[in-house]
Image (cartoon, rainbow, N blue to C red; front, side, top):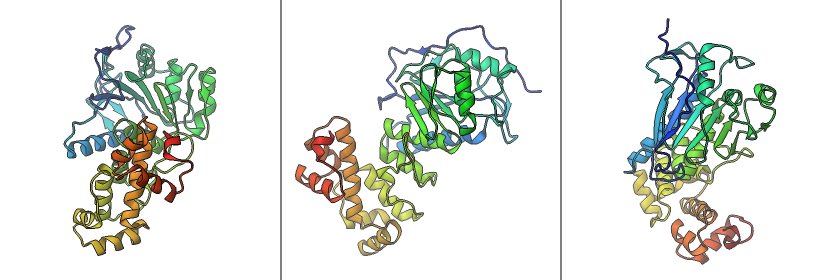
Length: 349
């Protein structure tokens, strides 16, 4: 028998010191991520996203920066058996107070419908109903049919969300006020972030890492996980930082990581070759053979993607050019047209 804990009386779990906590978009403060697990929770639904966050922390620390994500694994019971039969022990109880900023992550379970008519599910739903979601302070992340659990708790009322295609009708039935989106990898609506299932949970977390850290760091995590393509919230799409990276050449990835992390540095082919521990001539051959592009053309693409992100964040053309490593506005405009961007950089800002 698994040791059990009695669920506490109805008490909304506030975010500790919410007024003083750094917003989730503030790169200075850590984000506490609470994975809420029930017996039978799909292993890949939570393990994949958790690994993405762990790797993001590892990459940040390798750059001399503090870890960004603090992982917690919580449950109504101290032990649960996962979907593949592995026992998880030492799970923390559902907290009366959440450290903030915080995310609560809900995941799916096997079966065509989500069973909430048992003690563990009732305890979790009771706890979830006390949450007060707020963008940047307390946010919800659902993977697969975790959205159905959220709907049972009333957390998706009036929100747009998605779930696994087998649970779309169930989600709409549980909460008719939820705008259920089909054929979407993931959907973001204010403090609610929902994904379609299993590997799309990794897509969603990579998207969040890119927004909260940098696209280059998310690309590095994706490559570490050997996720060749990273999809977005609307249509299947490839991050600019993952173009030309559908290969497994370690030295070339090392160069691409370095360029992505510091696009504004004074990169030359010889300097890139130093990062790869090879000659400039051999590096050019590696780029052409494995990435399908020349080293300096790849550099211009990364700088252009960095400049586009800066423009979208509200910087002017001169600032964006400087942040991306272009020597002038003119050089940015030249790259803009070389790679087929429509309009002008000033129109994008």
